[in-house]
Length: 132
Image 1 (cartoon, helix red, strand yellow):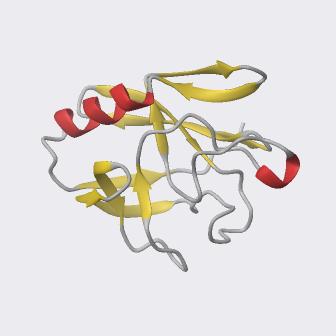
Image 2: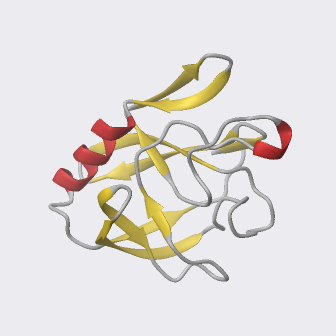
């Protein structure tokens, strides 16, 4: 995992999948501007009015409404970067660039693969802090 102004990039691995992920930069776990802290979180399927069937990351300390949903960017808007996340985790089939910004790519396909691989069943998400 690595973090910077363009986002916190990592991987989501398990159930035969390895997906790239992006979250917001680390900003002391502040709502809407930070990635979530390292830890273990229970995830279950929900229907989001905006994103459809997605996983909800439950019981993040001091936070709510954390989803795993489609999107490409998770940069620091105050520093001029684009974002599709206000605290959520965005998966992609791979990491890359869109224009001048780092991003995850093929995000809708990644969400579909995650839902299919897990058969939409709850799972435990382990986030490890190993910034490189």
